Image (cartoon, rainbow, N blue to C red; front, side):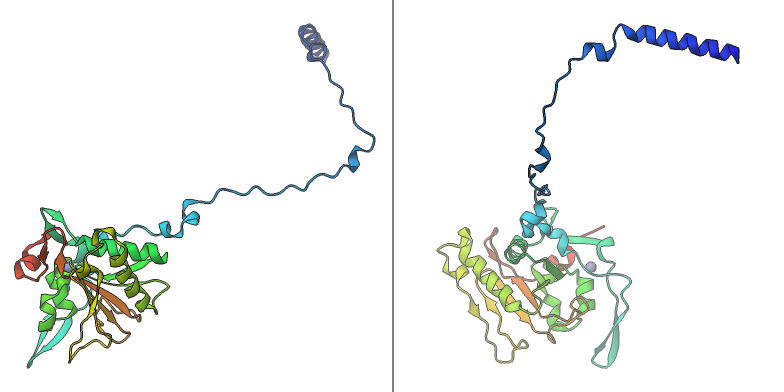
Length: 273
Ligand SMILES: [Zn+2]
């Protein structure tokens, strides 16, 4: 006990001795704060919460959705899809789906995967103009997936196989496909590269006697636009309950030529992994 007490006194002396020469109280200069006797009565403005700067997607709703690229057009086929039985004359033919994106890529042009740029531009224009998401239900179809969707003879020259056709609807505007068609027509009126070109700016209607679609399609030199009502144009890629719009490319702007189906373009010209 005694030893502990001595040690305590020693430490006490040591520390006070050390600090006495440079004590903060002796060095610092004080400053008096004068207060008025009724200062507490001064009205203070209530604190307003600081308004934070908007995030980019709040400033501009359109930028909320990713820009559409050719990757959005990849074949929707899947080896998990059930076999499709098709009555061909007297026999039943079985159609299996392709392996999808695991097995093959997009059509090739100059050794690169290729989708006609006008389709990508139009869909981005619609997405920006509406501020709503464009949902592609069918972009590129490889020949196997195309036959699986619809093995009928009429569908075997589909431009979906060339990357020259797209089926889509717009989320939030599912029931207003006419508005989407208006936007497509407006694109050709506004876009500078079509200025003064009547064959692009003016659309005609495709009136056919035994037409399968209730709404006659629109067309100009470059594209053909179809509007499918709720009970039209259904296949396993378009199983949704909405009307949808289909754009088909008729004219290749870059090569200045008609876009036509050929077996080589459809079967030989898409990248297999
Ligand atoms: Zn495929």
